[in-house]
Image (cartoon, rainbow over all chains, first blue to last red; front, side, top):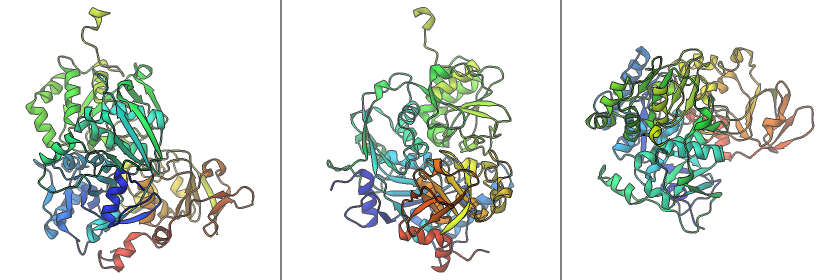
Length: 421
Length: 165
């Protein structure tokens, strides 16, 4: 019987010919990524052995640089672990810092056909690279690091077959919000993305969608490997890898065709995404006090470019704080080189260092009681970015930037709109 | 047979609600005390060990934070939901919280009712009788870890981690 991409990757990692939905598989982990939150006292345990130090990476991201004593201590514990076990792939505060999923992308750590785990729910981001990547819990990470293995429940797969191209001004975030609005939760299922429309999506766009699959409630979200992916990987790593393609007779729980050309900008309304999205037109006009562009999903170079294009020659509205957090220091440097950062700052944005930061309410941009924020980050749950009474809308980085200028939720201004009106 | 008083929740209950971000870097005790504090102030104090939590679709969606451990620490005898998010279900296994998928439980279970859960017949329903719903059986290998205190005791016995200090 034919297998989907994820079934083939998990079968290889389990040393089996095939797997079937419902199976519990014990697999070899190709890369276990520890993050700073793993080293807090309530999370960490004293490790007595590490199965394979070369299959472990340590990336500090949630609270970097340390904003308080607790974070500083967690970083110290993490550095001691790195030292003790000779971990080589380390991304501490400094030049190579970034949100784990962004670093995994730009360093080519999420190899096609491989298994990657990390204690962050957005680990599915690396699915954009044809990698079986899934967020797991703290104990799962300690098991993966010490034994080199973990388990997965094989779920049935829903395939998205993409055709067409996204219209001008419509982002991968909108594609995610579109699918969330159409289909709701994907709990207990994997997502597979492919089809002729895939070629039109750049790697940043693919990663935005794969990251946001966590918000659809799916397990794995794996993309087909095309030439663009192979070129991307070969520019970043010398490590060998074996991409997996779905069998022609693979069995899917459902096959859903998406015409990218039909997607329009959408907004998620406060406190949840699933069953709670609206068209941009329905959401415009809502006054905001903060606008945030960042996170593993939308702190990419694509996002900073989109924001800079909207903000060029404009100013953030009085009474609005626009906070921009690049997903990695490498993205920050590239955006600096391309002039995006100057444009953002001239407009009044505060550009922070790379970190998870405000997305998870950790630091640098929390909301106070009763405030309203529009964000392009990963979640709009109650209390996520600060006070539980704050309201968080979610949209693409372009819409967030346009809203920051307008002082209320707004669409991207169309050049010469008045002349043509 | 497990019988307990129900605390009923709806669809898409996320782990930011179960364990708010502001206790992420604090002690296990502080995390447990803050359970559901944004939507049900005083929940941790009112919850009695042996009580049962029910939910609708996609329970535990969101962050991979150790929210399941807080429910375990409160003494939750069983969590039942129409469906459970994949990462959250892993955490239930790994931290040792009995958690099962039981389609229809979100609508059936009423706040404060006594619910009985039978892992022999894989059924759940009101303790006083009436409609009983089918539970999706949990594979034996996972059930053993769930009911055995999670993964840490296994790793302690195998010498991969030091005993809890």
